[in-house]
Length: 203
Image (cartoon, rainbow, N blue to C red; front, side, top):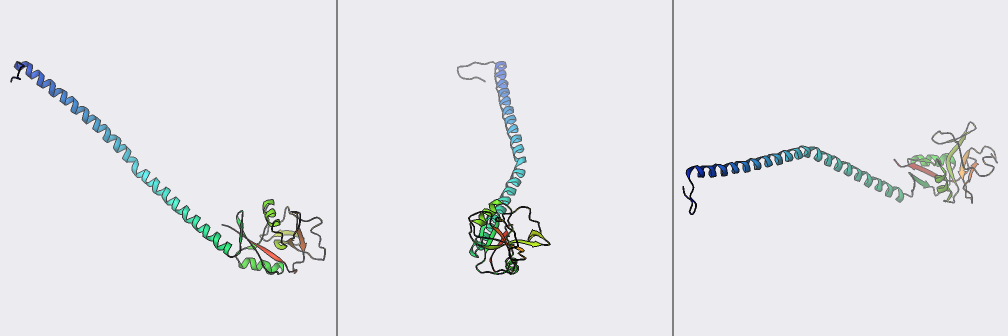
């Protein structure tokens, strides 16, 4: 075979053809290797796809659950506030609009799914002090010991000066009084008619 302007002998032509074919083979082999590596990489990446998908689905379900819980909490908060409850820290508080004895006051709180307020710390006491009202709290004396309505013994309190003192006899129930001082607890007769404060711990 002759190429115009170039004269090749059969032997030389064979070497050119075989050399060209050899280069094509090397090129094809290179392409095959590259494609194989890419395929392996894709397979490796895709092998993680199911677990990543599962993780995303789990995260999505968690977010949906949290979203539902937040909506429920907002709805619960709105409902309580419409019924006259006040929210502070982790509890709802309801101040009565009428006066009753300590026992009747407690029953009213229980009917509302709550109980008379238990004061756990100074922040809560300060919150109640700022109401500047006189009302029953969930503290009563039994067998000479002051206990909260949940049965726990009083370990520290915010008694007014000289209180408790049984001033008019068996003053076995505790109240908060209007005062200029944060220490404003007083003991009084349980039969005395007072406002009262219910507390419902938010779950």
